[in-house]
Length: 561
Image (tube, rainbow, N blue to C red; front, side, top):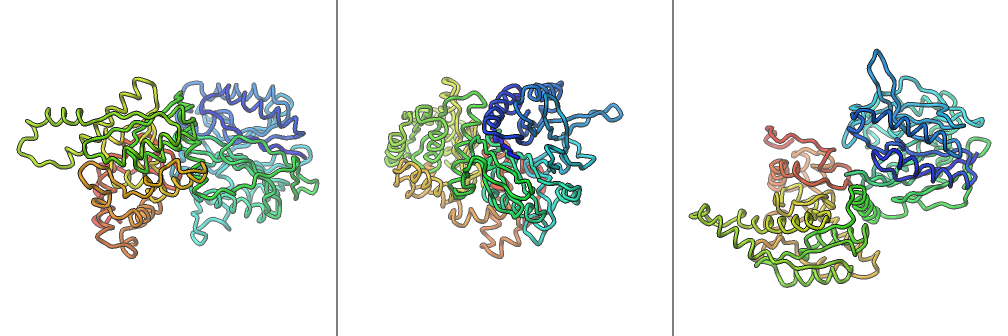
């Protein structure tokens, strides 16, 4: 039986648009000789719909869209959608998969395991499946599961395996016990660094464990902070990867299930070499996709950002040029009296190498006017951080004005290291509609910059920008390391505290205890800034945003354990 893996990029809430995209892809699947198509989780509404599910009639409209798709699909298809049922007059929603055949919804199964951790919040909206059963199709018994249902086998998850086991039941065990011939998983599994390999290893282990072929279709595209990398795959009963869709792109792959229900042939004789890109290259692809989809799905065609001559703004500009085209990127240099000549020359060299728009707007007059206005109130006080922040806030005013006037999306250029410790100014360099690098540590910013230059085949990010010591240039001779530990120390410490949630006592075994206390104190004290940060693109396992909800007004243990 030939099966098409349909990897599409839907838009959240665009019910008719998503149906039209699916119909086009299903038409291609039919032309390729497929007898069955498999689409992603919640393919009609896109994942995650979040509180759209609370809006009146949204689910009804989504069910009507599913009906239209069923009536027009050129071949049988498994499609993710939102199902509902009434119990004692109360509506219950289900994350579901439907088999569309002969113009109708012929069969439906529901998702069992509802993730409610990190960025996931499915128990807020959905009820779990109340039964487990197979779908029969063309002589095959299909064991259909949905995303998280496959992430809980006891041999791969648990303390001894390094990954948590979050649920008691294992839906895949139960589907296999019912006599499934093939396992099929409809997924919307977001990207973050290192997850691609974990996901593939887990899926291959599932196929080997149950001695069954496994087909997985993953959503592709970005929605707000979440980036979906696709990489849909076909794995045979021995756990061998037989074919995969492209990563970070829409794609269609047709595979041929053998009659013995164990082997998979590549019906179109191609494989995309899943996972060939290294993690830094994949992170770059993810950021480009995340920025492109956020901008276009929010109605923006161009972006503006401040070009300081530093590495963060250079990388953000490069990602924007790759995402939207250099002609749609506006880089603005905003020098103050403390800006070095090399900062301006580096910013100009970057803009010229990339072919983006470039303009210089001095903030000296703006800062001087603010200082004059505030002089009576500040009389008798010493200059310090407040005066430095006037520069950052002046830049924010200029950039926001350009954004408002010309309809550009303003990009925030701050990295995760700065955001973590509050090395950023509210209503200044924190201005922006999207924080492109807010989940990228400073040490990885340099790696990504080098990857940009390798991909371009030339130094579009100037070597002098990569080599210079990091500085905010808010006072003479200022360097980041005047206030912070070296990034080679800071970033691993932050990763273990924020992402792995290690205690202070654990960290102090590997880092200077005074540094640990200082850094953790900065992280705690600057939570309020992160609450006001523009949405960021998630590329690591634990990000600042919806997946990390720390209280502001609270008392932390003295040792930050």
